[in-house]
Amino acid sequence: MDYIEILGLVAAIVTTSCFIPQVYKITKEKSTKDISLAMYLTMTLGLSLWLIYGIAIKSTPVTLANGITLILVLWIVALKLKYK
Image (cartoon, rainbow, N blue to C red; front, side):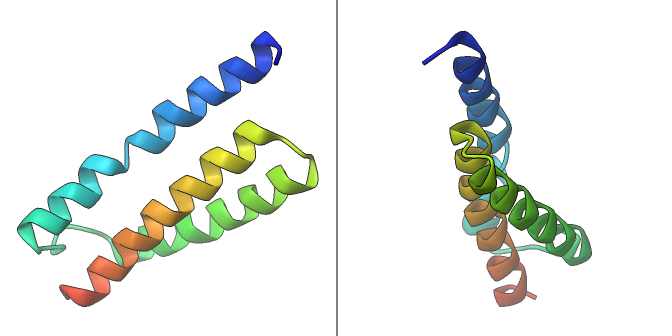
């Protein structure tokens, strides 16, 4: 694995992990009143496209980052709909 690949994986970990506190907060407080559903639906579309792109170019960092982030964002969307 070369340095650029490692850089990409570190970037993937950092950007993906930023959604974890939001998921935790929503789960703990059972409230999503301050969360924009439109923003998270748009983010879902963007992440889906990035995931397809990452798979197409066979990029592990792009695929992992967007796949895991997509799961977290979909979790937030599900919680938003549940705690509406």
